[in-house]
Length: 189
Image (cartoon, rainbow, N blue to C red; front, top):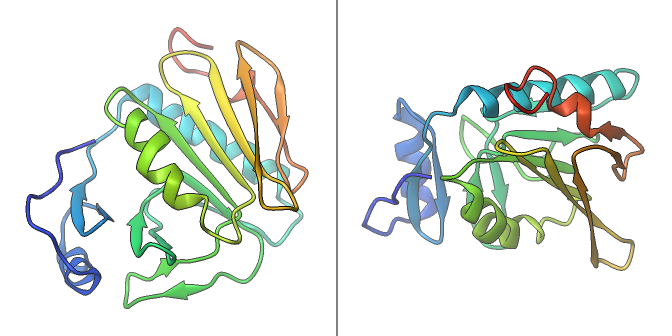
C-alpha cells in the first residue's frame, strides 16, 4: 500500500480528484491513498477468483466485478477498490461518475506484503459495517492460505481458514476450491 497523501480531504474533494486522476486512489478517514501496481502472483489469483465465481454464478443474476469498481462504505464514508466483488441484487450506485457501489455481497482481497496489514485492519473494520456484505475473503499471494469471514443471521462473523487445500462455501452457496484459486501461480500451484 502506498503512503497516504499528508493532507486531509472531504469525500467531495476526493471524488472530484478521483474523477480526473490517471490512477486509482482509496479514501479512508479523510486521507487519499494511491493504489500501487500488483505482482504477477496477485494478478493471477485475482483472475482465478473471478473465473471461479463467474463459472459458479453463471446461471444467476450476479455481477462479478474487478478492482476498477469503487465501493462506498456509507457508515464511515470511506471508498475502496476491492480486488474482486460480487453483487447478486440490483446494484445500488451512488456518487457522480464513476459511480460507487454501496451493496456488495462478497468482497475478496488478495494479500501482498504491502497491503496485508491494511486489508486485515482498516479495510476489514470498514467492510464489516456494510449491511449487504455476507462474505469477506483474504487470499494470500505468498502462500496457499485463505481466510473466509462469513456473516451469520445474527450479524456476528465466523472465520474459516484454509491452508494448502480444501474448500469453503460462500453465503450464496458457491463452493471455492483453494487449489483452483492458485492455478498457474508460480510456486503455489
